[in-house]
Image 1 (tube, protein in one colour):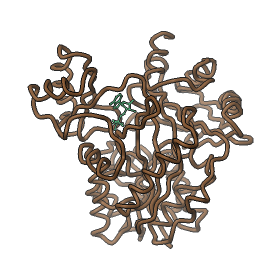
Image 2 (cartoon, rainbow, N blue to C red; image 1 turned 30 degrees about the horizontal axis):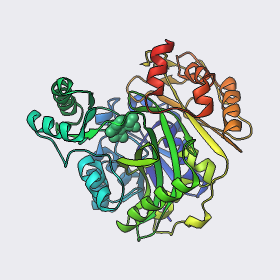
Image 3 (cartoon, protein in one colour; image 1 turned 135 degrees about the horizontal axis):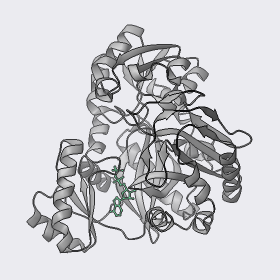
Image 4 (spheres, rainbow, N blue to C red; image 1 turned 45 degrees about the vertical axis):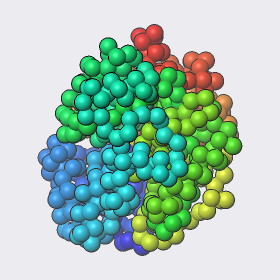
Length: 447
Ligand code: ADP
């Protein structure tokens, strides 16, 4: 087992990894930008190294600075968290070249899945059902017209290199296609430096259902069921739950086995998530994330596992500590993302947190790097905490969420807490009857 690992991230996910490492008797190294000198992950780690100025490009995204920090501290492995370099194949490769272990899949697997067209083709080959759409990239508008006609409107144009809900445009008719096609391409160019796009059938009322998979890198893999992440704003998740209210045991076993077999076949190592849209009982692959997800704690609650510990174990060469038959669903879990944002515009609200009080009690987990007096810097993501609750069933989890939100205090900045308080009054949320469009419609009607 490693003696020391470096966490190439910040915020709550850096704490998440430091905590797992400490429980395993592994020393942790935090890296930080100058803007994060007072951040909680720096205080909590055994050691810390400043790797650059506030801008992410020169700090959390600087491969050279992070590798130097490993060399200086003698860290043997790097956990990338999510975001930043977590799905950067060149980073995984560079670490390997320096004899440092990347706690995640191989550069090759990251590369295959990072390119959404290749990912879709790979998924198809591995027997995973995909959304009907173009065969690969669509280079010009004339081709787009032909493809869209074949698939049938509405269609969605998506960036091959896309992520975080960016570079996606819907066209309901041929009239809308030209603008959608051109804007998707120019947005993709700006956001990802790659203007390749592809076309998919736009599903009307699907749910976003994702399957957690885990592999040992030696041909063995399991699935840990699904998460329903349908409540989204601008294709960004805000509320996630497991198990999915619309998913039966039979469906879970069927799609879960397909996913586990697929990743076993490619000798996938560590945690991964296969994302689907789900409509009328059918699953349609949209993408795979080759990293730990923000919403992984709901899965940890219902399966009683520690996914980060497991990631570290397999990265060090140990076998997985569970088999498929050990993995049984217990109760229901819900996560809400607490962002420093003003509802309903969701404009970021960085600033000083004058008072922070985390909720507690049975079945409550608060993953956050906040503390009294902490200044949320304006340079990074607005996620400041995740409140996750667990109950014996969905009703109990909802009641617990409502209770815990009541205890949570984040003063000094605007947050998404009032959004969740309002959502918990909605009959559709209480009954679990929502699609990926529900939240946007509700926001438009409510504010
Ligand atoms: P990203 O990598 O940017 O997150 P995804 O491919 O995972 O992009 O899609 C994000 C979200 O966009 C989905 O959860 C869903 O809400 C919406 N979406 C993507 N593809 C489709 C589609 N074919 N039909 C309808 N909605 C879609």
